[in-house]
Amino acid sequence: MAVFSEITPQIEMLTNVCREHYGIKPEQYSQFDVKRGLRDINGKGVLAGLTEISDIVSSKEVNGQSVPCEGKLYYRGIDVEDIVTGFLKDKRFGFEETTYLLIFGRLPNEKELTDFQQLLAGYRTLPTSFVRDIIMKAPSKDMMNTLARSVLTLYSYDENADDTSLENVLRQCLQLIALFPMLAVYGYQAYRHYHDGQSLFIHNPLPELSTAENILRLLRPDGQYTEMEAKVLDVALVLHAEHGGGNNSTFTTHVVTSSGTDTYSAIAASLGSLKGPRHGGANIKVVQMFEDMKQHISDWHNDEELSEYLTKLLNKEVFDRQGLIYGMGHAVYSLSDPRARTFNKFVQRLAEEKGCLEEYMLYANVERLAPKIIAKERKIYKGVSANVDFYSGFVYRMLELPLELYTPIFAAARIAGWSAHRLEEIMGGGKIIRPAYRNVKQHQDYVPLGER
Image (cartoon, rainbow, N blue to C red; front, side, top):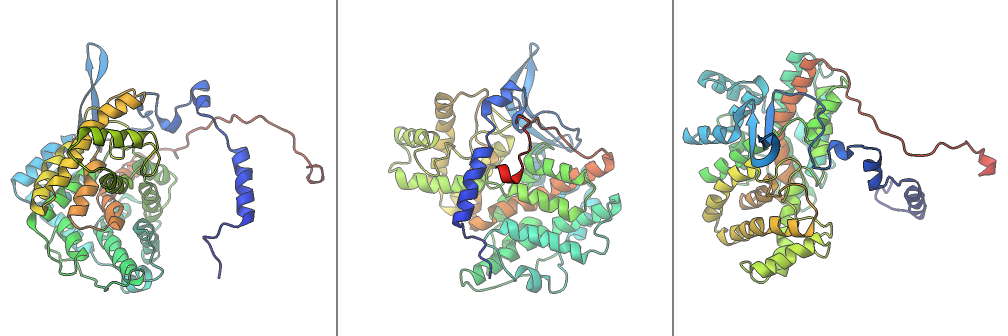
């Protein structure tokens, strides 16, 4: 049997060869005026496309100059904070309504929303024996890989998998939106059973429940949850559903879709992007960072002690030694992330219900101190504030969601945005996305094998 994880002496030797021949220097980007990561020196993204799906606002014009402002996020032109306020005022769940808005471009009326909810409920059915034959076999320790594998396997069950007509892609996207929570949670149940020796239980989703309620029902042995728990998770899904066409995973959706490939391949590629700790995996890093912080700080209310730890984080002296305060800062927002601002209103209430108010205060203290320390220790070109990942991991932990499901839950929300952008790319009928890279390696002559 092949050992895929073994690093042999030959691999170590070849690694050294790689080190010798990969060496783009940071200063070369400014030398050749290349926008590294498709961002300028201020962190602003290079315009690579047009979209009607969402808008991110982080600055405004004052006397002819661009100045930072409190962040705003719009879904199809509607302020996401107003969307959240609207459905909470009516005492209902909002993710399905938000999904409808993102995909179809307008808010549904009551009948359209009911019909849409019923459509999603009808799609929450996996192919016969899929759980047994696919999810239960070779369970992965990483649920994002399990989710991607399940999505790619669904290709084989779709008789029209390669049909990229609008009608067929819409059907595929809606089915995936409905199935993502099941694929993620069932994958986790299989993993904890076969790897951790825990009891295996598989609950069926209930058609009358919202996406957030079904996630909690599928996950918990007794299927029970409180109204507050379901409400907060629903808000989290809404806030994670979409964030512009330029974020890494959504841009991946556009890039891969532009090649003309099938829906399953495009969404699997986006999942691969979201898995990365610099993107969807960031909230896991936040939780792990705080666990390390709690072990090294005796007084959570001591600003001096907290500041010392945060400074050590930036100087690569503690935690993972990457020089980052996870959950702080964003590629676009400076003064505030509207998702974090909206989420924070519910975090404290959930913390009170769960008896975690003291830990919430630790998060609040770090949120207050970190921007000042980052500004002092780093040369930055814009303000720094808490992003949505700063609190989402804490919320998921209070909801008793396992760490392995943090990013898959993000994916269960973002699939709504990915679907809207895939449809937009198909409808746009544009060319394949193909940016350019500048070669900085000198040309050289070929040397015959015997002379090397």
